[in-house]
Amino acid sequence: MQKGIHPENYRLVAFKDMSNEDVFITKSTVETKETITHEGVEYPVFKMEISRTSHPFYTGKSKLIDTAGRIDKFNSKYAKKAK
Picture 1 (cartoon, rainbow, N blue to C red):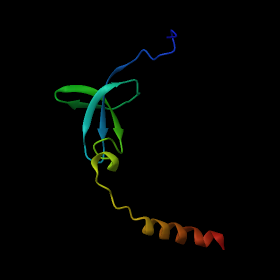
Picture 2 (cartoon, rainbow, N blue to C red):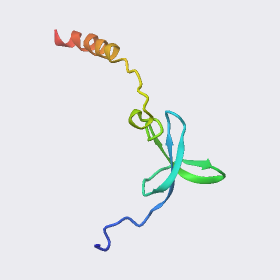
Picture 3 (cartoon, one colour):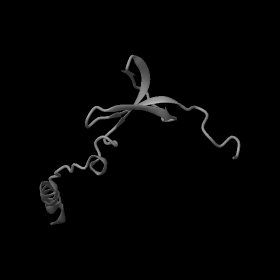
Picture 4 (cartoon, rainbow, N blue to C red):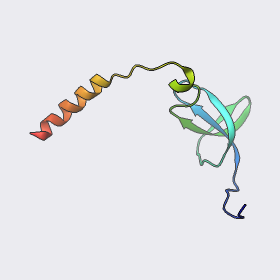
């Protein structure tokens, strides 16, 4: 293993899933400015939109996404510019 190429600043970080408020703790080098108290201990927090507790692949549940409505909005928004 080469010396001097690996990060030195590993520390415990709380990763928070914003879709279901799940929090898990792991070592990371991610830079954060916010902190959170989890089980009585304060950790730097990294907020995520999706994690293993909310991703459809892991949960087996799928979310219904309004693709038709989004496509209609896109077409109506850019139809004016195309003319």
